[in-house]
Image 1 (cartoon, helix red, strand yellow):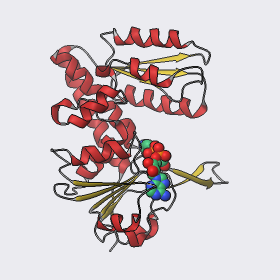
Image 2: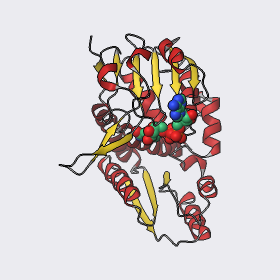
Image 3: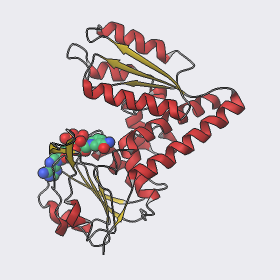
Length: 297
Ligand code: NAD
């Protein structure tokens, strides 16, 4: 049987429509829309394209968007002052500093300077702690893990009591999604195992998974025989494995041997077109939430 494909592009579209509708309601009721500032330092081409996409999406859903581009030689003190300015701007609900930063700037110091209530990336230690506590305490969830959970929920996968195996223990994907799936609540209540480079028998853990979430960054790491028949497989990996000579674009592959895995899994995300499109959608959702919190006071 061929797996149901979980279409990240369609789910992204649906989420953005929902955000747009809520923004329109907010505007009508309170005469206010969520405000997002994107701070881009220097001219790294990949960063420019990420920021451009974030700005475009923010405008599409009706946010006030400020694109604040700064030169690569901005001092750390000036950048901290800029963040402070937006921390105190009531029109701004989300502050995004595009990474990576130039070497002379301490990335940790900069991210920690963002007011946790405007930290829509949810990388601030306060938000990491809130995620750990869970429930209403978790104001913002980090965008890629939040996107993964949303794909699981909207694909109709049962999570309560499910065996979830997460491959990878990074701070931006593996650890947060594992904690989120173990929490009490919607799209969670799972029994979670985290596996990583020091795990003894990766295959045996993966084979137990009702929901297998793979975020290792190793193309085709997960073999089809590691997948439990009928499992939901979420492939987070984005690996550049070559170049399409005709289009000049990178050929992307996930961490799961997709062509074979889709004959065994019950539901599966493709790469590209699965988790990838979700991250920016969840960023918009976090910014909307931040504005809603600020209206509640
Ligand atoms: P990372 O390199 O920080 O972490 C990878 C983790 O995988 C590590 O904890 C490591 O222990 C584990 N790992 C690596 N090789 C392994 C192996 N052979 N066996 C078992 N475990 C192994 O990476 P990350 O930032 O978590 O990203 C993981 C992948 O997800 C990358 O391909 C990245 O590009 C992709 N990613 C996609 C999105 C998105 O689509 N929006 C967002 C973030 C990351």
